[in-house]
Length: 217
Image 1 (spheres, helix red, strand yellow):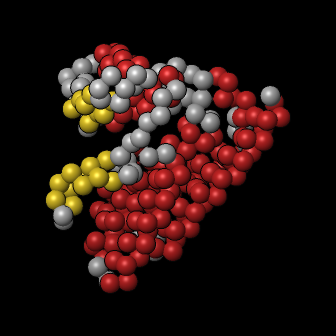
Image 2 (tube, one colour; image 1 turned 90 degrees about the vertical axis):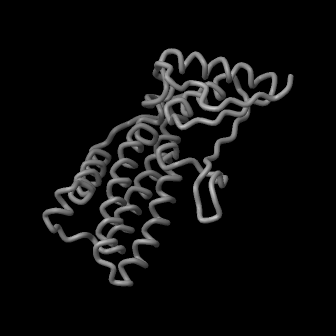
C-alpha cells in the first residue's frame, strides 16, 4: 500500500495506451497515493477524468522556472490546463501587467503582450463553448459524451451573437497580420472590457443552465 511515483509514464505511447495507463493509475489511487509528473496535457486531463470516475480525490499543480530556480511549485496548472473561470482570472491579471507596460510607453512590448492576450482570450471563448454553453457534454480531452448534461443546455440567439462577436474581435488582433499590418491595438481598458464580456456571459449562461437543468429534471 506504499505510495508510488511516476515520471512521464506515457512517453512515446499512443492515445489508446495513454488512456489505459490513466485508467490503471486512477484505479490504483483507490488503494494508495499515486503521484504523477507529466508534460502531457492530454494525459493530465484523462487522468483527472479517470480519478473522477472512480471517485478518488485528486490535486493538480505545476512546476515552474523562476528567478529563485527550477521546480518551483505553483498550485495552478498552465493556461492550457485551466478551466474557463481560472483562465479569465489569468487574463485579468495579464491585463493589469499590460496596463503597466502601456503606461510606461513601451509600445512594441505593449503590442506584443496585447496580441498574445487576445489569442488567449480567443482560446478561452472556444473552451467556454464546451464547458459553459454545452455544460461539458463534450470535452476534447474526454472520451465519450455525457448526454445527461444536455438537461441544462440551450443555445439562444444571444449566445451565438456573443460568441461570434467575441471570437471575431479576438481574431483581429491575435494573428501575425495584426502586428505586421500596423493595426491599432486596443488600449488596456478595452481589453479588460472584452474579458469582462466573456466573464459576464459565462456567469449568466451557467446560472441559466443550472435553472434549466433543475426544471427539466
